[in-house]
Length: 234
Image (cartoon, rainbow, N blue to C red):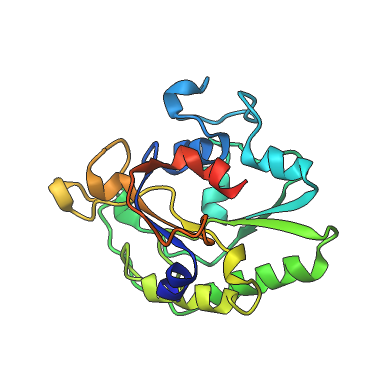
């Protein structure tokens, strides 16, 4: 399904995050600014972003109904440290969609996969509900999938589930209505680093981007920052 989306649209082969951490990356994606260009020098709980109109603000002006789907944990952390979504945004913090990677928080403990919840079905049903109950004609849904879907135990071990979820979305959206990207990468032990954060190694900062057909170009090789995502979508 990921390959099909790329075949129908445009694949950006050298797309880079402006900051390899969720909240900082969200801020860059939605504002179009690099972290050093903002008034946010540290990673902490923030008030609503006011340096410039964000992607969310612009879509709101165009009368889009804006929804944000997070795992409940990220809604309590990364959202509070970015706050780049306009007033009136409808939030959907979902429980039971993620398997927490405890080593990320240096607990030293291992995790076991849980099959108790069907994470992609929970997400798909939430999106269906949004479309069924929308109050405006145009809807923008920002879905931040969990680092690891429930039932899997390691970064990347759930890519097949993500691919399945994308295929399910083809029942709800046309190819030219879907953008696929990430906020940051992950080192997975490369350079002896188990996670990500402030590191700027390739595996951490080079991220995927597939967009609807972009001016008839199938593949973009030029290096592009995710600060450009706002303009690309608009």
